[in-house]
Length: 247
Ligand code: ADP
Ligand code: MG
Ligand code: MG
Image 1 (cartoon, rainbow, N blue to C red):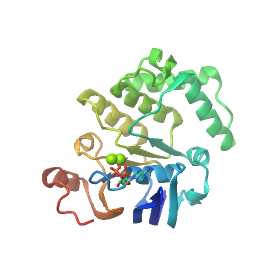
Image 2: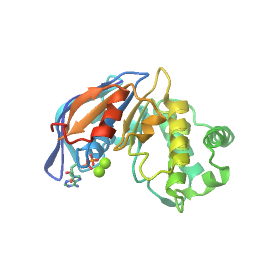
Image 3: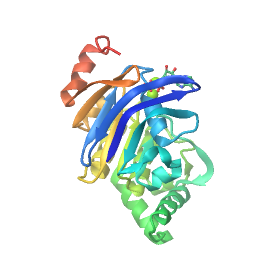
Image 4: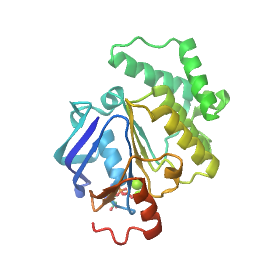
């Protein structure tokens, strides 16, 4: 589904990713862990196509398409969802409006009919109920005045409504209490743990992985994947830290 080969990327002229390779197949959940400053967020921003993140070498294909050739909105329409550590607030635009616009723009690009207001609301309500977010919250402006936990719950509802093929979640667990962590875990498991979907979980800590069991755990250090293992690698890193990982 996602194939990253020898990716080199720089930010403000500074080389951050230095030959990163990673293959994600449908049905797999991958976790990337690594020390602060390793390049984890740079990887997610580069895959998102954020301006300022320049690929200098390497290739990325998503579902057989050249991902790097697509505009950010085209990446989303192709089925890529990105969740970030600090979700944006959009005063004046309700969650429902925002999500309906986003979903219908993506459906249009794929040649599908737009969802009617009624059908959209049904879908939104089902996701909100599943994740314990009230419809009142969904009618409020995007993330404005939401607590950290509510933003994350909201992000999971967004993900459920958008129904992507591949979700890349960058430090989606940071600052969450146990209940919110459980909700995020439940969201990832119910929405994304399916044979035709995949997840890339970027996390500094092991604790989210108590709720979402990864098939593979990778260590990112010095801009490349330096080690790959199964779920047990996350536990080892939690115990031993990153000090013995060569960058
Ligand atoms: P991580 O998410 O693994 O903690 P980041 O991808 O955020 O790491 O950062 C990787 C490196 O890139 C760090 O050394 C950071 O200081 C540097 N970096 C990030 N953004 C910029 C920027 N805008 N300009 C220069 N260096 C940056
Ligand atoms: Mg960081
Ligand atoms: Mg980061």
